[in-house]
Length: 217
Image 1 (cartoon, rainbow, N blue to C red):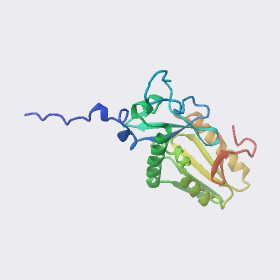
Image 2 (image 1 turned 135 degrees about the horizontal axis):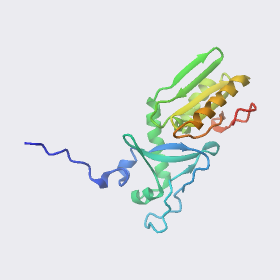
Image 3 (image 1 turned 90 degrees about the vertical axis):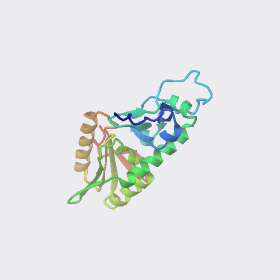
Image 4 (image 1 turned 120 degrees about the vertical axis):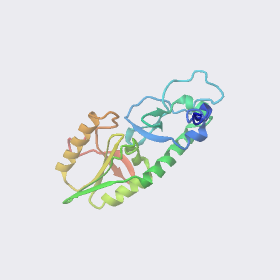
């Protein structure tokens, strides 16, 4: 006798339909500056009239944009305005849940640390699609500042969603230009690019890196 196949969860319990399921899976995802979307604050959960078919976004650091995804096996669902209405929550709830999930993941995700003479580079490239978003976490920014700030200015690159790279810069303009070129090339060839330029950590916040000349393409 053949066994009945294992029962599948009801579609109403899928993350796209049920907030309790989605809230455990949501992740923030850095997007390029200028990414079009809605912040969701003007939507009313009681009505879908005039619902814009756009992703949910939030203004991120240094002009970047924060989006939200529900990861799956081999795919991901981009969170849009309609999800807020289905879930009956606001954008702040989505952001808080996504950041909490990112923090849990980041706490166990590895870093690569490479030293070559006075030059030290730290990066995250797990391939989970969440590496670049780690820079959104205050504890990660503090960790990078503590590790690299003794060298000099802390430079950050987020060329694509699968890479966060950081280094300490102490008057090494040649190295800064080399890093800038690498980040630019990596971003322009990426399937999911974020930004081809360099950023800097200043007082725990991400800002655009202004020099040396040629450091931002």
